Length: 179
Image (cartoon, rainbow, N blue to C red; front, side, top):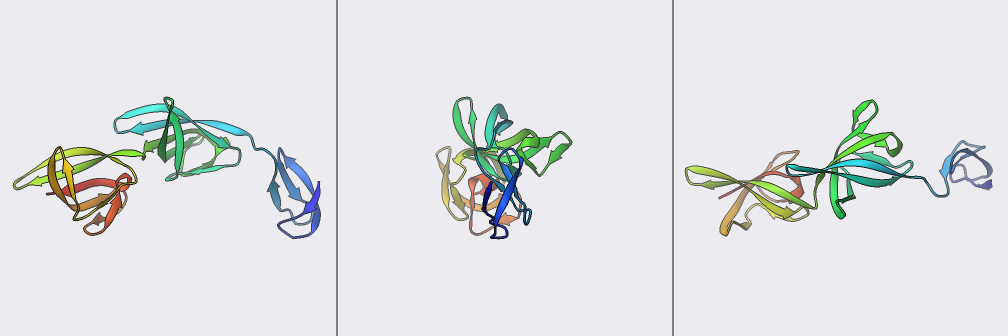
């Protein structure tokens, strides 16, 4: 195939180095053309204490990274999950090409259970509330938990510091402190 190379800008001959992948004979620039093969990767999808098996459809050459979010079909329902771990033949990695992946471990982020410490004078009660993952919770906001009003005093991020002012998305919360 002969065409203009996006790498060097010259009219070049491209040779096929593998299915739908071509290399410029002048500069070595590699391009993909045509339909890529689709892979179905096994997913372990955790939502609180419950885990279910699912499949994630990805295309050849795609790279998956810990922390990315994908839509996954779980028991006939579309859910949004965040990649927490990736297993390949050699073990667990932070990122991998889809062709190497054996299993992706995900946690639900479309709806999440947020642990809450409710301070009631001399005692503290621990509860969990179910919220949409993208819902913003702001220190100082008043929320209802089991019918009672409580004021958010601080929010501990899953990976990070204790937030004493500002807001955090529910899917990023490790624990919320209220009075």
